[in-house]
Length: 355
Image: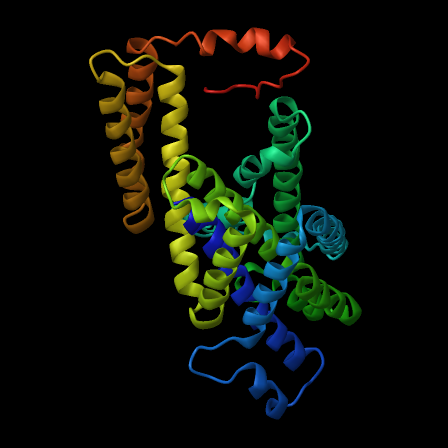
């Protein structure tokens, strides 16, 4: 499941980047179709996605230090670009664009949250490079929590500024901020943001290909896959070849669906494992309640998405099952060490876990 998340998410971003490059050259630089046909030969082939996948794979094979330098540069550039777009959006903010506030109701909000979680990938990926971290027991959970707060704040602010800058029905699904700036007559900001998106997006591909070989290394160490994958360079070559093939020949929509499925299963299994670690199971009761919880959670989302508000009638069952787990499955000794972890200088215990 994590392979679907890391490897295919890198392929999806590479594919998306290839499409954005062609669109940027056509719209912003007015390149003729004669030259663009080289980058869009047809038959679903995307040469630019192939190129960025190969370059990032070669960069990973050079070593972690070189990859980290490039990642830091592109990450800071990307953060500055998001801040620029957000501030620009608030400068051009029109309160009338915020009405109606939730035009599609609760089901629309749910569908939007499902599609937006793609942008939160990578926080769990940090755990795969724990071997390169200093004082990982403390720094990893602390850095994940701080980064998550920063990214969430940036996402919310950027979304509000974009909707305030342009009416939601007129927002471009392919190039939101550049088209919104252009609609408000700020041509230079549109060109800057379009170029910035093209320039900084490859960092996501790089991070994905950094993680995948280390995931394979951990699985090889546990005997789950052949020992050949225990060599990081072998793993990088294998992951890079697969990513390049997927990015070059598979459409973005199909890759997006695979990534979403992989993340859903991976996060569900992780959350269940956390509850199993923190709670004792009496005669298999905990496993049965967790299975029941996941079934009803799936049904609730399915009904909310395709039927509407009636899905909320199922949600009280989720609260009941969670309460049942809390009352009938006592905490393990691992959970009782929470207070000591907070006070230990070598550790950082994430607040409100597992609640």
